[in-house]
Image (cartoon, rainbow, N blue to C red; front, side, top):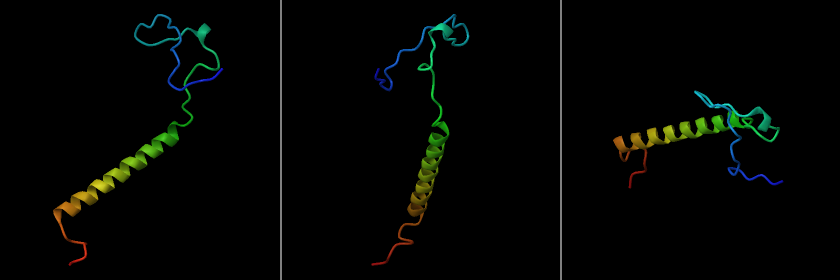
Length: 73
């Protein structure tokens, strides 16, 4: 059986009221969520965000003082 990411159907619900409760009889080892890579993904996201912030600060500083730090012609 091949698995395609994003192609699964949600399992049947049991009286969803205020929350979501899946039918335990419909769940097996192939059903569920894999959060094993969440910590690594969060680290990557923070690193990208910090990199973007540094780039924005550098760009803003360059715009305030054009010509400074550049070779004069």
